[in-house]
Length: 257
Image 1 (spheres, rainbow, N blue to C red):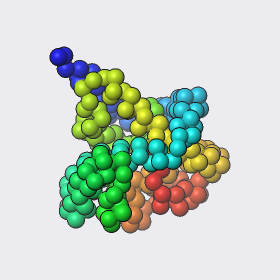
Image 2 (cartoon, rainbow, N blue to C red):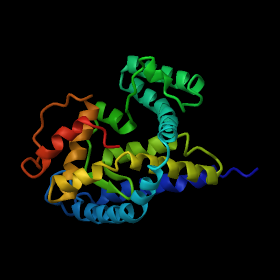
Image 3 (spheres, one colour):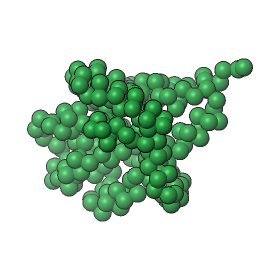
């Protein structure tokens, strides 16, 4: 049988190529924000994402949101269980061994008693759900965030988190499905499921500031710092303070994903 897994690699190659281009152009033309030297390019990508969301992603998420709650909960739990594997690895890489072992316990319990993760039995047993990725791990290791980036369809990121995302995707069980048909359908379902969780947040962002791009940029920068330091980031002056950043600060207590 022909192995079709290499067909999943164009996404990773595209991200890697983007990183190379960004590395060559980051100093070419700084924008108004010191962490956003590629602001013109980022704003163009942001506008593309807004249009794609308005006409494709949001309508699909709204249709998905009509599904019965048990179905949506089961789908979310299933993908959350898959994510717990890599989350546990990143907790271990960050030296948080208790959390890493807890994540391993979550996967074991939910994959068995929880029927492949459809039911989140681990949370009911007191095993807390965490949210870690390689970008956070690199941040804990002292790697700087680099310039702010807006990725096509995926939204806010930065150079460090995009590099981490390449590795995250390379070990993602969904991306590792060899048959492109099931792989693409599963990837699309996960993407729409995550978007459906933000159906109320998009209206809040549009009403929070005159410039939605500035607001989301400030939100992302603050939120990622909060994640890296487990909710206790050291005080750092934000260039956006007084220009929508203060409105975004309370939101860092919530997960925008």
